[in-house]
Length: 461
Ligand code: BG6
Image (cartoon, rainbow, N blue to C red; front, side):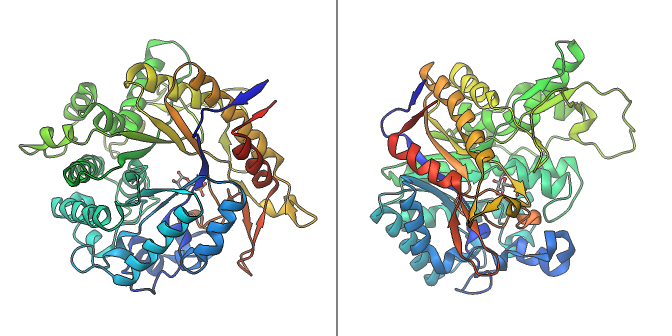
């Protein structure tokens, strides 16, 4: 069968500033939470590797962009590092950073690669975190000012903007599950950060509208369908609560301009609702997006809890569900994640049926492989498993598009194997292998394959 994609479909990959640039303490960059946390707890990072050892995009962006061109990328997403552009979070703009991002954007455009730019990919400037990060409304204004600075500096050339990448992840990691700084466990504070992130998003969107730039603005969400174990009422309820907490908490405000009433009622019932100020509702309504980025790696499967909750234990989402391991599920054994390709179709169909078929694209999808060096043969990583992974997801995307989904592109996570927060270089995702010792990049088999399908705008299978 032929899988031909619509004209002007965006093919490419995604990365982020802190994960690729390196130069964490040079070029005038300020400290962010990752630099700070590494100093105090290096043991939290796989093999003690910090963002200083990210893949040197700051230095090698020109040749890296050439490598993108070599595999027929027509688009690429990265982020701007807030702490590089405005080292203190507010105030003076760093001219070296302006120069760097201008050069990156211009080089991409010269190579025919559309820059998709995200404003925040997990990397809060430390000076802002010291004030409470997104718990503090002052920091929301600082973020909105930073966003405005980016729009004014780069908005003449950047036509695809994203306010946040996976905004729920810093909430989960930093305030519930202990995998991001500041390592707090407090649901109400988590809910406050989530709520304030939505407000910050809306402030940036409305600023973008005011400037009347010729482009579009959206957000990147990790949407993970919550499949119930069975159709039993209790399992359905568990999956509904997961959907409200992990998907709709950002999806509804971003697309509908308001929160789901059920989520508000649930948080209220458990005394976890953040402080709501006059004018917030109107602000959230201004945050409606033009386009959505969807990150999808694995499904969430859940069942009703079997045991009672310890009322003295901290309130967490798991009060309402337990993870469910479906017998016979297909696994990526190298990362321990389930592979469920149809999930991507279910997300797109849900958006088409319930969210006005918002223009969207797959902003991240990919297969992490620990110990990928074992697939090195004759100098190349033979990642047939990644080709299968991408191809099977693309088939479901194709089907969703045929049924009317407004999906306009596909980006793999990631371009070159990159540093990934506490997992550092544990799981490899790139089209290009990175030799950590020499920083040399070499094309994997999946990169060769992707170059062909991008050029042909589809494939036969
Ligand atoms: C995505 C994030 O969810 O997962 C990326 O947006 C991250 O920043 C990627 O690198 C892979 O994560 P991991 O933990 O498998 O390396």
